[in-house]
Each structure stands twice: as C-alpha cells, then as structure tokens.
Length: 176
Image 1 (cartoon, rainbow, N blue to C red):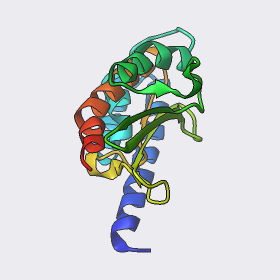
Image 2 (image 1 turned 180 degrees about the vertical axis):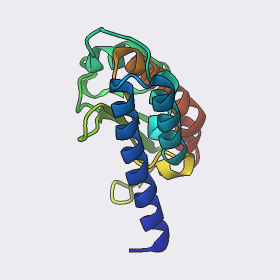
Image 3 (image 1 turned 180 degrees about the horizontal axis):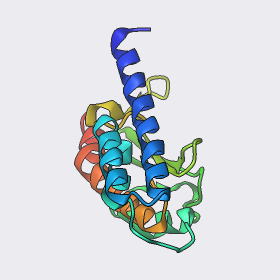
Image 4 (image 1 turned 30 degrees about the vertical axis):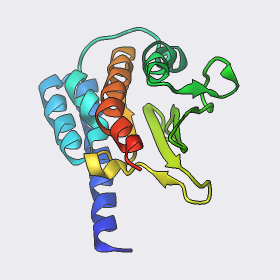
C-alpha cells in the first residue's frame, strides 16, 4: 500500500470514529461538544460537512431518500441536459446520461453501503474501454458521499450535491 493511500484511509477512518463519538455526545445531550466533534470529522473528510452544520437540529420527519433526490437533484441534472435511461422516472440504480462532443457523461446516485450517506459516481468516456471516474479526493471527499441522519440534513445534502456537481463535476465533464 502506498503511503498516500494509507494516509487517506486513516483520515477516513478517524473521521468516522469522530462522527460516532459526536452522535454519542448528542444522544447524551452534549450538543455543543457534539458539534465540535463533528466539525473535527468534517475537517478530515468532507462527507461529514452537512452533519457538522446541522447536528443537533430537531427533525422528526421520516427520511425519504428517493423522493428527495427526485425533487432536488434530478431536476438540476435534467436542466444540465442529462437524461434518465429509457426516459422513465428516476429510481435508485438508474443512471443519468448525456453526450457532448462524442463524450459520454454518466452520473449514478445512490445510497452508500454503510447507510445514511448519499453517494454520487461520475464517469466519462469516448471509448468504453477507457472510462475515467471523477476523483473525489481532489475536493476532500474521501468516498464521494455525504452523510445525513435526518430529513433536514438529507435535503441539505441534496442541495450541496447540486452545488458540487455545478462547481466541480460539470466543468470536469467539459474537459476532454
């Protein structure tokens, strides 16, 4: 394993541990300490940035991932000329695609296998044998996912994804 990769994995691990500690503090009623701990996690891995911002906010609503993504992220991507495969409604596991100057652009949105994270995979190619994936490490997100625990956090995660796609992914797609 290369030294840089180990450092990245260690930061990701440390951020996760800090986020668990923050959740325990929050459950015990130590809101300010939980916010500080979650901020430490976000400094190591931007996946926790939204949690750091909103930890301790009360939100009793049921978390609705698919409908929230359809309401916030999908219209944004459709406006950027992405289409849902087979022109059907988006659901988890269906990618969004567009083609610009013979370059295929694909965005896949889904839940991270560890739960309570919304992940995005961005890829582009001219030749399907040479697919290039966006490197999330370049913007401090170790896994290409953003964490949430409440519906309010999920809604902010979706809006944050739109910002990230606009600022980082769309320009990356345009580079050939």
